[in-house]
Amino acid sequence: MNRIPLVLIPAIAALSTVAATAQQGMAPFQVAETGRTYSRLADAVEAIGDAQGTILIAPGTYRECAVQSAGHVSFKAEVAGRSVFDGGICEGKAALVLRGQSAAVDGLIFQNMAVPDGNGAGIRLEKGNLAVTRSVFRNSEQGILTAQDPAGEIVIDQTTFSELGRCDRGLSCAHSIYIGDFASLTVTRSRFERGNGGHYVKSRAATAIIQNNAFDDTRGQATNYMIDLPGGATGMISGNVFGQGKDEGNYRACVAVAAEGRQRSSAGLAISGNDASLGTDVDRNTVFLADWSGDSIVLGANRLGRGLKPFEKR
Image (cartoon, rainbow, N blue to C red; front, side, top):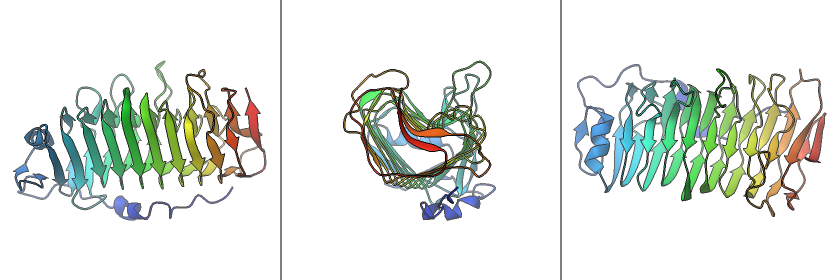
């Protein structure tokens, strides 16, 4: 298969080096606008309240979590890739439970998130807009999971999702990203790899813009579609590199549209300029795009490797 480019996310290069402990003797969470520091992330979030503020997070590894209930809050690593949230869970949901007006996450690592219902996530977005950049979600049940906010917009850029998802214990599957009924999802210049089950991107957002990402499933286990738009969507899927591995649980397509029933029109959804292939150890045929919607999807030119049929109506 074609090599999945790492250069899509140059800002992630430093993320493999992580400080083992927070800076000694200093409260690690600082509200930039006031200069005040806090020993608990939740206290810094509470200090911002329904205003707008940025929390600067010192290098270190934290078993912390926080719930944002109001305002506009940015969570920003002082040094990208050196602030790690490791297993701390609020409300049995995620490290960050977000239901304010908007939130932004920049340069953070989320890892080892697990809860009894199988949906432990780095971020649980319940309402509002969300922007995530230069971050990593790894070795957890989910990376980002949302509720429903038909007016909300989600943007993800230069972020890595690794060793996420699950389909076990008789529970509904978890996914690297699972977006509910939001206005839009935009994912750019990001990397998805080594899935442990479920889909890499599952989105019920009305509009999906998924561009210039790498989906490397060659070392995935029991994974399903790389992009799943289960109720349909408009938007664009372009410039992505897909590599399907031999251990997919559901290898019937790389991209699926309306597999759970047509809930909205996908007319005009544009899919072009992508590069898809099967791993060198894969001995089967499959489909690049599977469509259950019956809508007029605009399928342009895509570079497909051996064993990949461009389109199938289901």
